[in-house]
Length: 301
Image 1 (tube, rainbow, N blue to C red):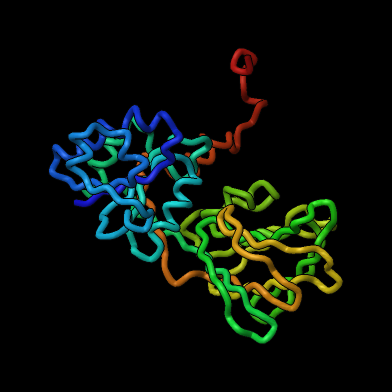
Image 2: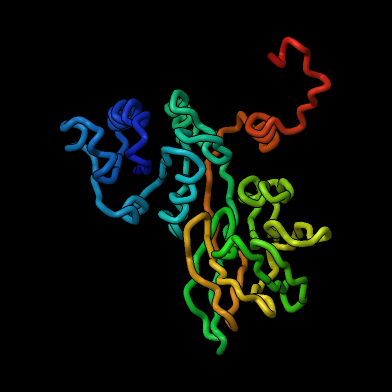
């Protein structure tokens, strides 16, 4: 079994665990691959026993499992690294909130045993594919996103106009800061912060959540994942519109151009321990459904 690790070497906590994990995996007869930045945390003997690469893309080559060390942002990056290689990702939480990375460092070895024995839940998460199209209808650059694609005004001091179509049906022109197009995975991220709904990850839907719309009636919309979302600068829009995918700058939506967003043809596989359900995570991470009327005075201190 070939295991690759990906993480932020600036997180000092990783160096407390990674050397022991690598030694343990090698003792189990597993092959380990690291980038040179993480390999520097290991002893010279361990470094000589593993495969050290320089490029992130090499971590997915002939890999059976990619272990993401960090928070949800690291998992989003890991999803870009594995791309269409169909390498499952196991998230070990070294970050903050951690909706996707649910394995604690202390539980890594037990979680790995569960993965090896097929006892982990394999969740196939849908991706979005965003493609730029010019005024002549020519397809340009495209990008995939696990959480969301965001069209946003680069000048937050003035509202932008964004027009939206679902398939060939005109939806609306929103005036505000922008628009979030999210997957169910992304429903607990930026979309949630602007009032979007929770969506169970297994549902095949796409969320459209306006950002600070200058309207009392604008609300998030949920559409089928088979829909084609088309976004153009609204008539009379004077603001430069940026396009971000999973928090990374992708492109600029020029006047007369359009952005087409659809379900990507491939998925990302996330491995989750069976100890927690989606609703368990909502309650634990967001205190969702808590009612302070039922909290005793001594529990509030």
